[in-house]
Length: 285
Image (cartoon, rainbow, N blue to C red):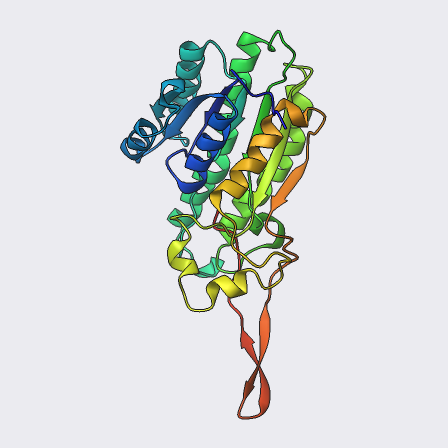
């Protein structure tokens, strides 16, 4: 299928991470021009882009998604470089690996996760829409698109990561609100949410390496494997593309058919069935 992304400009934040790099590859494979943003790992992103065959079509930017001036500056730089910005994927996110109940969680951790995952997405979406207001819709009618990156943790919850779940569940409300706002700027504009489950990235590597963790993560899924970053990226790429031109306000879950969380397991010990805590399950994506 031709996604009709050739020549469209895609702004991707958090582009230095596993899903971010996969997003860059996926959009580039469809002919898009890339405005790739990273924070503290901008040098890693530059090295990655330098090794890709599409590097001449990419602009690498450094910026903090928590800072409105930095986000606005990145949007302006992308629009100046390419002439406009058509697509936006606010992908920057963090997931602290330590399991902590909310009453034992440091307020600093709570604020950092909310600032990056939720405020960062809000500010990025705001800057993207402001840029769209200045440039107007594409003359060829291929509508603007915003694809938010959520998590199954925002749907099912995640014990020990309440702040992460809260930051991701809020993106559903943002998606439903902005789908009604973007059409005032571009009648063909769309806003959707891709919702990964457990995904094999640097951020989740240590957690998934624990004995039995990967098996527990897919316990309720129909497809018994952890997602790859490319699985998520391809879904986001389709949602952003004109091929999904009548899809807006929707959540596309990429989690192998996950249905929920295993809270407890039954285990045989000396011929007696006992209940054992199964541990938290979440995307960390």
